[in-house]
Length: 124
Image 1 (cartoon, rainbow, N blue to C red):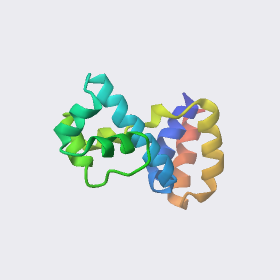
Image 2 (image 1 turned 135 degrees about the horizontal axis):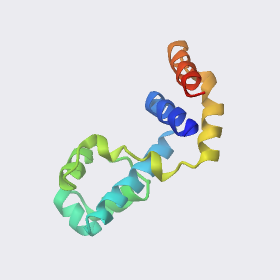
Image 3 (image 1 turned 120 degrees about the vertical axis):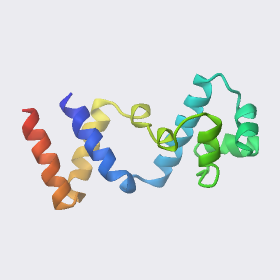
Image 4 (image 1 turned 90 degrees about the vertical axis):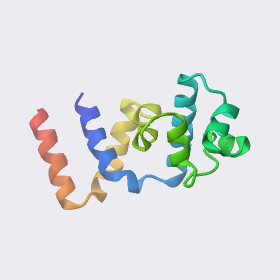
């Protein structure tokens, strides 16, 4: 629980520091997860979002970032745009979370570091 709370705060404050390749990969996995959960084929989602199926395939594989298609994909899946970026659960385990925090804690601005410190202190 302690680690999960720290990671949630760190992830929310540090999205901009995540490597773009990781964002593309996780976003692609999230879109694929949502599509499959709704029982929609790749071709069907591509048609609903008005994008080429090959483009959607590249997006789901993490090869390209769908900046122009994001709103269309979210609309086709009947979800809010922010839900496409809810991919913390896709690639995080306790070891990964701990290592991420250790690696990135020194890069936080002072006010974020204070917030993390207060949060951790309140959990102990």
